[in-house]
Image (cartoon, rainbow, N blue to C red; front, side, top):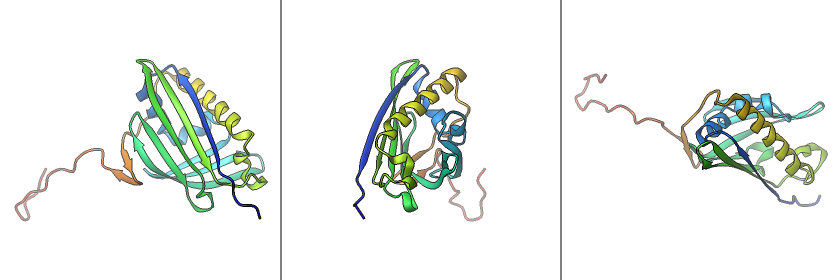
Length: 177
């Protein structure tokens, strides 16, 4: 069998919403099937773990993805798990103006371009990402605001708490709060 060839794609789009609105909506993975044609379902198992069902018709695949880096209003980076371990991606957010945001999606895949990996064929991937980003643009600009948000931080796959834990009493048996 031939060795897996790495494929990289980078696609950018501008949306007419503030950076926090674009980022907040992107963190709502369960809404992806509403605007992405190739995403059939997303289940958020933990803040850093998702199960995706992608494809169309008979060519549907399920895979797990781990968010390895996430910084509010800046970046979400993930890697595929299991047989999708060669799949990595990131989406970066950059404010261009108070109500304009640049979104850049970068994907890297070591998957062989076979029928089993339809979404990793070189000619299809850039066009597909551009099309799906266009749908996100229509969705978020049409709504004008996000449907929810997750503002947590993930570093090296570890979820960092959004708030500091309350201080514990130094007196044994003395309750706090």
